[in-house]
Figure (cartoon, rainbow over the protein chains, first blue to last red):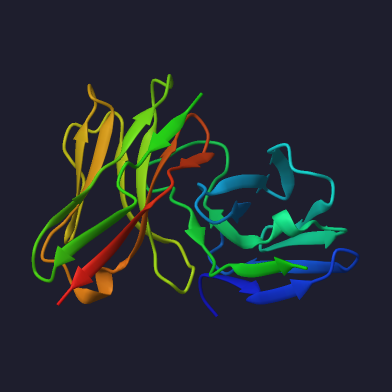
Length: 117
Length: 113
């Protein structure tokens, strides 16, 4: 596989469920990101990991819990979510997470479409 | 606070014609970069083009070019010779001292045959 993959592609869960989203990058990158994309709103950065260390938590509620066991894998653990958490969750990776370099663009996965009932 | 504004929620263009998608930004960073991404209905965000704030020439990548006007804080995307496959959402984004990107609300482009 190449690029950034995300599983599952679609997820429906109740408010009392616990589920996890998985992201894997095959690009040899050192930084990984979680974004939330809600309808008619800009993409919102949630978390940033650089060399497996969390460097950004954009005031995300604790019902979202990220985990980065290594530079290639990123998880988003979900529990007791609310209906307003329904959105497309996108994972991305880039070569470096500290500095903005020319062509240090972020490569995105296809996203997980989450619906909370 | 940093902000990206895309004033066109939707655009139509005839196949083979050129189209300009607007983007303005607001930042106090001295050094920054501007990105354009394409998001087809499949959901994946596809990187298109990058412009650094100190680049003197406008960026070009194939049929994509970026009309960068630093004094006006605008970074419009120009797509030449539109194709049906160009129909998608287009997002402008800005990154500053770190690689934390701020995205606009996007423009939905529809290419008509």
